[in-house]
Picture 1 (cartoon, rainbow over the protein chains, first blue to last red):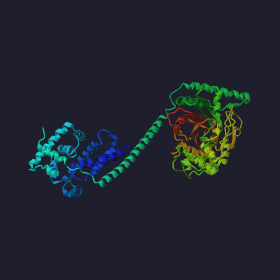
Picture 2 (picture 1 turned 90 degrees about the vertical axis):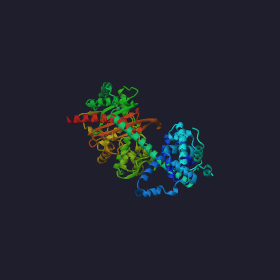
Picture 3 (picture 1 turned 45 degrees about the horizontal axis):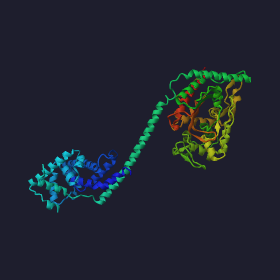
Picture 4 (picture 1 turned 60 degrees about the vertical axis):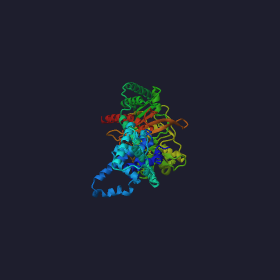
Length: 176
Length: 448
């Protein structure tokens, strides 16, 4: 197999994992361009990859950097007055492309997004994506212990915030 | 640290977030884009690889260019005295002969100083590239006088007779001399238009295997015949002979220039060589490129000397007699017109001095040099190529507009790190040294 064909194979296998991660990270459904960016970067960097990590782990760590870059750009755009970059904003942030979840989940998601970034990151990877502690540690560049404790604190912080804002968690309603 | 019930619920909630998938349409778009990127990347890598190759070759050539002046000069002064000895021996040897033949007044044409200098050059080159054999001849093209003659073979030939024998020994595929005669013939016959364009690379106009330019039949695209000659394009020669000149005419000129017959120089055992077979168009075309037949170094000296000498073929000779009409005595015939000879000289000068010349690197500072080199694969007596065994030679004269010395240098099977295509670099230093020293000496003599 030609080495460059691996990327296409990986896209078919892990494309949706990357997509989902980016969607929850950015809160948007229209992250195809970012997915494209991630796999193009992987294609170009493939010669330096050579089986250091599991492909999915590697792809997700590229996705994480792409997402962070993206959110930085987004913050810049948000900071400018709307009149200046109104056209950009309308294009980039059209509400119909926002990630919409069922009511209960939307509240949890919204609350989670208010947490600090390390908490958000570990919650998305470990719980929403369901990635193992080991893999998460590799993606974030943390130790496995740090992943575990941060996850614990993140869940605690999220639960606290939700009960503080008077929102009770109705697991049953949320799922069914 | 055990999670509370609420915390477990939050965790479960997060775990229950829906799996998100890309739309299939979008997936296809991404894949297509990835494929385009991949192609782009491949192309870029390909170019990058070429850049490395080209860069490497350029660096190598650069290094060789830097190194070339040092190649044949491993600072050996030791062979100088042995050279001197053999010079004396040579003079004694040939001096003895005429006395026996009863030509009391004859004087040897060999110039002691040039002879010593070429022996040194030969010794130096031997130490540098360890060839099987090396032959150097210097003559005055205006008279045919041999000014110096030297040959040395690896197997320690100390016998001076052998040194003269090499000059008269026929070798297959003379290369440059055939090409020069072909050009002269084409110009003389009005069949050479220097500005005419032809397609270089590979010539399939003749039945049989196509004739290819030395760069693997790639050539240089559509170029003029002049550029073709300068670049030593086999296709130019083949086309010229096959489509314009024809084998019969070419054979006539080869004979006129003295190939296939002894020159008559006073060296023992001079061979007649062999005219290339030109009955078939392909053989004639190959002869024009320098392949086929056999010629002695003396024959080549005489033929190219005729170009240097306004079209007058002179018999190479080792003795001169004061008070006799030397010119008439040794002039064989007018082989081409003076005008043709001048044109050929101009083109040969461009071979060395021209931007596209194959002989760049054979020149001298402050002197115009006309020369052509050839690298010929050796063949066994049956004409079969000996794999990887080559002879490199160069023949040329200076100054190109008013030639005073004609030099032939031949190195048989040099041991060189260079690719065979680059063997001009092996032969250039001795050629330049011999030509430069001889010319300087001759000009000094004339000033007196």
